[in-house]
Structure formats: C-alpha cells, structure tokens
Length: 132
Image (cartoon, rainbow, N blue to C red):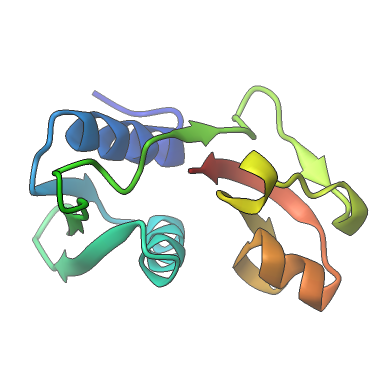
C-alpha cells in the first residue's frame, strides 16, 4: 500500500515501536529519512542504525534507545509540517520544545538541522517534527 507521507510513516513507526518496547524497527529507505535518523542519533534519541541494500526497496534498521528502567528515550515525536499543510518558519520563529528539553528538526537550505544548529547558522526552513 503506498504511503502519502513517508516521513510521517517513519515517525509513527518509531513512536509505536518505542511504546511497545521493541529493540529495533525497520523503515523503508530514503535519503530524507536517513538524514532525520542521523539527527536523532546525534541528539541521543536512538542507539544506532544500519542501511540494508535490498533489491526493490532498501531498508533502514534502527536500534531504539531506553533508559535504565526501560523507559524509552523518545517520549514524544510529532509531525508538524504535513503534505496537506506545510509549515515554514523563519529563524526567529523556530519553536523551543519543552523549554529546550526537546528538539525541533528542520529541513533547511543547508540540509536537515536541529533547531539549535539552525539558530546558530541563522537559517529557517520547513519544520518537519518535534521530538522530546
């Protein structure tokens, strides 16, 4: 079944697997998804990821991260800009998530950036999602 919002599908898979306490989740591959997952790994929300080159569609296998009491590192992950309603923000309008405890992921002219890096580089863009 075709998916209209591939990034939304990826975020839903991560959210569901995290809530179900799975160790890993498999996501269909795309360059945008890999960049978002790299940001999540750099910020410490996921453990590691590997890309599996398969014939019709490559896959990304993501190791989820949990605390010592098996509490998930990702407590919330929400899609902001959707295919039906894109949300673009200027550098001054980039929201802080939970007073700086979470992150916003943006698609900018300089690539996929986390909110603090976008503010440093003084660029705005499409607000993809919020993670906390």
